[in-house]
Length: 442
Image (cartoon, rainbow, N blue to C red):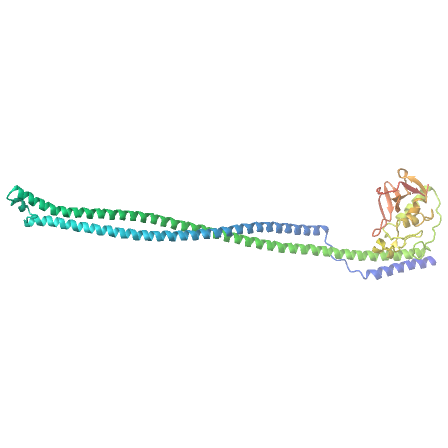
């Protein structure tokens, strides 16, 4: 009857624990895979790299634009110089044209005077001969009464015509000087016109260079604007990619929170079950060291060792609880004022490392709840001779022992490792291991 009541209590306790806690845990939220998060992060990293490349390109483009702007300013100044030179050349050509025109007019006027004088001389000579005058007609020579008279008349005619001819020569000399001035003026005009043409060509070249520089500057400015737009676009894509990663990480965090809540639910269920089992077995109230001793174990050494290991293996998966565990099974952990408290060990039902050894060896040996004392509880054997069922320890001579585990053979052991973990099977760790194993059986 008592057994039936105990089993019923265990079932009721488990049912209450399951129902009461489970109702507080909502359905699991989405849990993005590591691949999805990694892909999102890789996409964000790629976008960040692209932003960096565009930023570098934009910086180079800005430098190029600055150079082109300086070149535009230079070409504008060169165009201004060409404009001034052109104006100067045009003014010089205008003056040269005026000088040439004046020289030509003087030359033409001198020529007209010569032509008039020549015409008058020709008319005088022709009239003298036609009128038969003593001055110019042939009759003046034919009517001479003596050679002396003929000579006198010829000298007079020659004197008159010679005087006119002398004046004509002077006029022709003046006309030659004016023609020379005209030629010099026309040569100066030609040079001025050539300079004017060169200045105009320089102005056209300067204008063309200025136009090309402005077009290059405008083209670079357009390229800069496009780069800036591309950079802004990729930055927006980067922001969106980062938001996606943050969203996935947020989903993962919410899932982890849910998982932790569910784990607390399962731990509470295990605690309720352990309490019910302890009560059913006649154990203590759940406080450390409160359980009843297990009945003595008899049989061969190998059988006893297998029973010890079986009891330890039956606790796989139970939570680590600092100060937890006695000969009757898992118990509530106790406060340590530090790490264990931060993990909530005082709320958990389970084992610490030495508590698991107490339970495993119950009925074989009564062990203290301290791994340092357990190290000397049995016969110490070198690690080279350790065998299945021996206890292994970690620590050092100055600080003491801080951990114990049960050796399973083949390099494996079972242990209650540390806060936040559960009873587990693991490979033997040789870092910091003590040089001897403790053997209680055999």
